[in-house]
Length: 93
Image 1 (cartoon, rainbow, N blue to C red):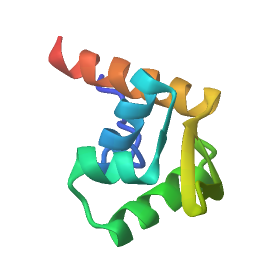
Image 2 (cartoon, rainbow, N blue to C red):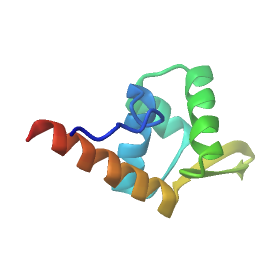
Image 3 (tube, helix red, strand yellow):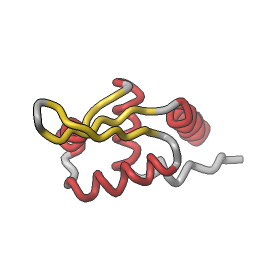
Image 4 (cartoon, one colour):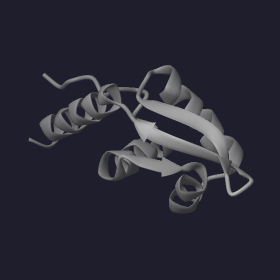
């Protein structure tokens, strides 16, 4: 039978963010905004959902006197992504 897909990762924007972080480990808000072409508000909402699920950690601070938000994927996030990919593979077979 088909495995259930993780509804948190089944969102296109959240999947794009997690996929990018799986490859890169860390990123910042502006880079994620650039690669996804999403609005700042939408990215903020999706990042909060991923952080609440403990898939990412968000650190806010300053870099060269400007606000800087860095995002890092967690082990939980990597595991959830791998499980999601395996579920998709099951659908393809």
